[in-house]
Length: 341
Image 1 (tube, rainbow, N blue to C red):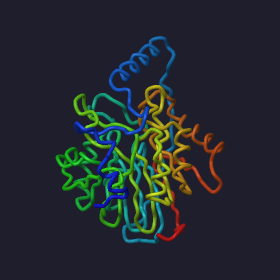
Image 2 (tube, rainbow, N blue to C red):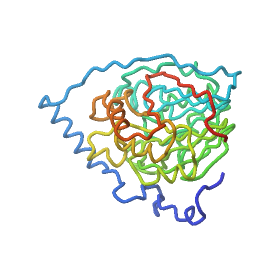
Image 3 (tube, helix red, strand yellow):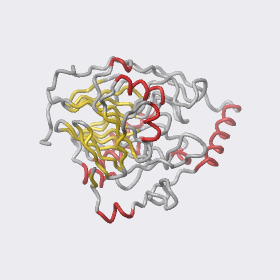
Image 4 (cartoon, rainbow, N blue to C red):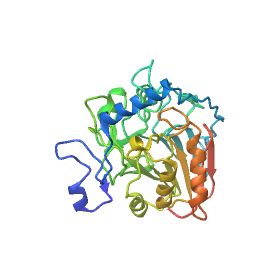
């Protein structure tokens, strides 16, 4: 493993709490905590009692993924959106899976919690052979127990990479080994080089483990391609620095959903306008919007994030840059390397 930052940055680590655990190191970047959650849930319950909210029925189109055959390496970049933040990247001969979740609920319980509103477009058993599996943090909509167990059985040779502390979450589920990374730290994972990058979020799967493990995004380099996945994040000041240190990127994958109400979600989730700001700073030729339309996590309508993102991109997008909004299961192929590795 190696560092992309200076020695001084590696020693200071302002995102590490002195007493242990992690934090967002920027002003006004801290989540509101349990008190804010209670205020939000109370407001939602009150609104429902007053009839001010409704559970709209939205049907999203689903298509069948089109993966490259395992014995074919045409050098292309193939990007498949499974749903929410789950993406399959085929960078030439390297296959990388981001934040896999196949379960019916993003929850510790099978009977309660956010339920999938769009079924997974493909079964785990139909995935191509995986080289690398990445988890950006430990929340239930990004790290799912049943999915991890199934992937560990089906892809025993895959390399798993995650931010600091997540190995203890993954190895009891059958994952043989996890490369844990701090921000700006890189590792070689099979055919790919993976670097963990800053994100503005939080972690925890229960009441007593808040911020005990790190969160982050990932830069992935393989097959002559460079892709950046932002993970879950609010708008922070490091996106341009990520592009400078770890780019140039061929693709940025940025969350655009789960943002309302802003007073509560603002520190930890981009809204579409913030997502465009982050994408422009990352300066990739294409940006894929994820983290929407699969689980009902927050208060905005399910189909609002892509519509708002498209409007924001039209108003502010740079010439020669594209915003991708996929159907669940859609695969897009970039057949020509835009630049040398």
